Length: 478
Image 1: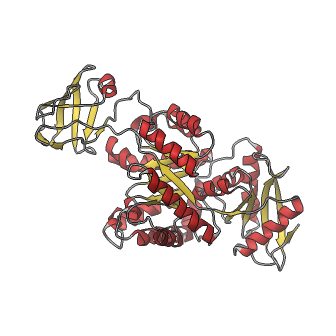
Image 2: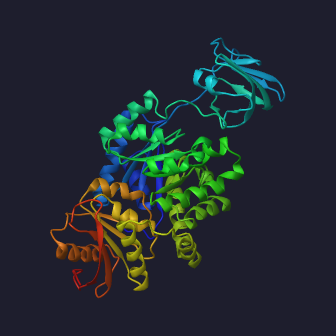
Image 3: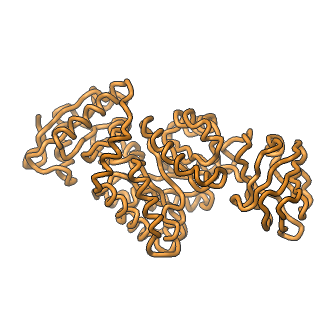
């Protein structure tokens, strides 16, 4: 099944989309990979979803990626004696280590790490930012705050700390158990929540040991300040705009989205734009005009993938949401302006043989107006390098490694085919033409460009470009 767009679609599974028939419909509508949110998914259900996705994958013969999203630390208030209180602007409100149920003057904060890290002047955002406090006096036992934006506060509401660097790991005991269960099940990507520093990613990678790729979710202001180091340690980024918009002024999020998209592209690593892309489609069969524009903006920016959350997981119209996102992607990519925007944003190649080859391959393919750019790749790195250049022709990645194929499901423009490795260079060229012909990328008599590494089958040796003509049966020669 060939997509008519380059950007990929990541759809979250949930109560509205957990059976075989629905997952099949979501794939047919345009979903390239699926997200399983461990905040709401027990291990048995996660294993069931993975098995169902693999069933769909086998029936279509196309690798489908699976991303497991770890919950991360959840910082919450304690309980109130009467269940809730009304906080008034200007009043004093204390957060402390006393487990006694709270009232309108104080409440238990069951996180000593917060009390240890808070400093006067730091902001505390409660219930997704609906209530805002400013710390005035702090100690390891309590924090006296002033209510800047009041409102009703009830038991165990969330706490966000945009100014405070917490000495806590991004991995809770629950996350470690969820991670191990996901790795045993054989998922492809792990999304890491609550990332504050590169060490959070490195810690997760030590546990993963190469069994999955790591996507760092950028949702904390502290991560923005260390973005370069986090990106270097990660395999991909997710712009988690929901939490980012709680802890930072909303007007900063669009510019940060653009910065992260371009930064990830320069690094040659996938970037996913997430949260509230078609939010109204949770209840409505059509999105708002503003949501369509938001999705289109991510496509114009050259992001690798766009994500649906509750729209596909719990909404009333999951298939329509994926289909709508698919149509937006196709329409934007037909716009002549789209190509000029991608070209203007293209970073110079890194001073490596692989990047130099990828850049040269793009130039050759575009100069000759070739219908396809074919990558033979063992680890997937050759296809990722070529995708970094955002070439005009479609990228066909051929790999003998199903794991690499599934991970490439999130990468811009890559149509991945899992096939037996080439025996030699002639076999490589011939089968590249046959596969591109079979999947509708090229017609008899046309030429294709092939990028590979020699010796064959050795990761990280991208060093060869060949142009081949496709014969009447799809076989190719120089």
